[in-house]
Length: 394
Image (spheres, one colour):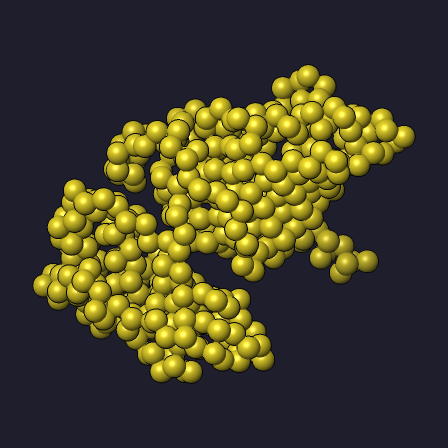
């Protein structure tokens, strides 16, 4: 059992929890807040959706032991919320519920949608609501209900519903993210905001709560001084990362970048800002940043630290990299255990190869292509099966 202090519906809760107890079980069984429903218990159906620090999250795969200090809002905590009141009336008027089992999660997600994207159309609503499943209504009444409240808010400024300020949406270059114009209009109908304002977003280093931490190391056949000089040029470093590019020129202390990640048939484009903190005396540095994929609303906060050491009597450099990050939203499953470690190892290998090419004055081989997480995941599974059969036959 671990003691935690957590705020639920504005009430401070001090409790001792088991590491394996889910947030859904905690609020239902310990606090008797049974408005949160459990469906699949795998984070797929959305029936258990609550707000964690203002952002929708699956409570069946969230754990109080990892949420010490967090703010949780269940459907009961939104009883007096004016936007929720309008949604409840719209769901009743448009017959957006039948058995009602999915309705609490639907309402929590619907509130987030109309606050973030006032005035959006049916196709955009369907895209935003794709993570909430209903087996009764056929969704038609639900879509009409959400559209009616979104239409009432048309013309109002979007509201940041996340626990911290996020960068405004970034226009994705068609060179890095080829999609049809009609698809762009359907998924992101909001006016395009130029990438330049991102530089003004406050990105002061913040402590990461329960981050995924990864450590990688590789050698580069170049003197440490030459590698250090490259690391002080953000444009050259970003060019070595598969799928990454600078969205605006860097002043050497801050960066405004985006990274395109391919997930099978889908692509995510994380746009955000970061600050660079070099430590010349120790041949090291740290980059703090955060970003958002405007399509899935997945958010990432990260800290990357590097240290350069001499190898091969000074003819080579050992680059040590430590990464800590927190990924929230629909893409958070990519941060789980072995998947994250394998993706990090393969990304590091690609970065090392591109870095070697850049130091030789050559163009990085794979930097322009999006990071294909789907193919990396497939390669990981193949490798795991190969090792498994190797053990069985050995």
